[in-house]
Length: 153
Image (cartoon, rainbow, N blue to C red; front, side):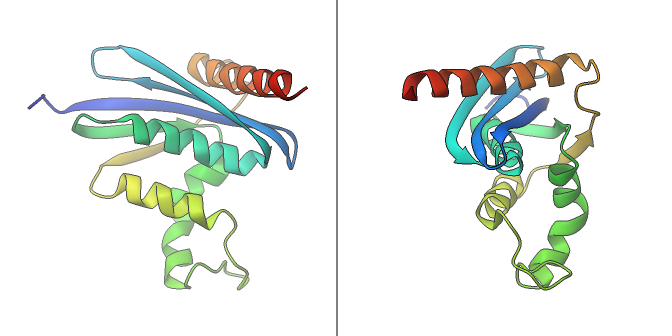
């Protein structure tokens, strides 16, 4: 059994049109400093769905025990959703405070399942502000969208 360690996941989603072609980029950095990059794209999606998908892709990749996960995102939707809003949504049977169904419930539920039993710190950083890993995640998301659009054209 391996030694538990801290892992940092950087994630970003992007969309051309909203809805439109979307992409995500994720970088996972383990306690040794080793990095793994993940990206993907969807034909018809929204920016918010790609932000959530980026985080999910990182969490799904973790196979070793971790003592703590630091999730770094430029999405206040993702960060506040997981730290402030989700408990109220669940208490109201997945309705917003305005009694409307929560958008992207399928992805929120997936995030909940992936974080259950794990210590996760949700950290927000300003997007497009020179944060090295956030900029790289944005590049990965855009490259994934480029590849997707190239394949379908």
